[in-house]
Length: 207
Image (cartoon, rainbow, N blue to C red; front, side):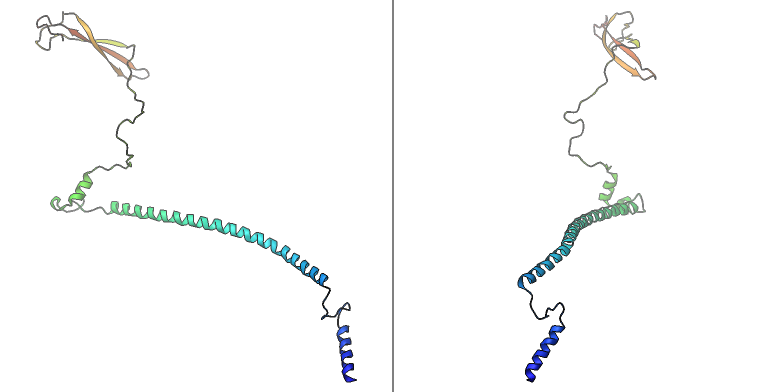
């Protein structure tokens, strides 16, 4: 019959066109098909693993670059503020306000505030908030007295400063001593002056 002949001829033709005697429309065994799928998945995972690692490194580097970018922006902002401040100071120095000292403006028309600001001495040091002078806990130092002097000089007291009486023949006692240090390189020369105290025989005053 024509119908049966066509089916047999068609089936034979499709079978001959297959390789390894496996029909293309025939589904393989389920276990074998699953193994094939798992093998392909494993292969894909092996191919994806390096990409995941690289992606992780790229994310880490991107985070670092973003952090650096934020720091750079903050630094640039700070520098711009400093530049504006310096420009303002430079303009003030290059183009000072007109007054009687740098222009023909008479003192009577001069700005009082500008005049006071010019007269006031400004210090470049920033205030520390502490009181002036030595701070608590600061170890002070003073010039110490030398035990030995190179020269000894008695300061004469020949006349009474109260009445003018002659005291050259009146004996006296040492009232106090003072030292004057002269730096005479390489060694200092120390002179000690003894100041006498006498009793005036005329007025009885101790001088």
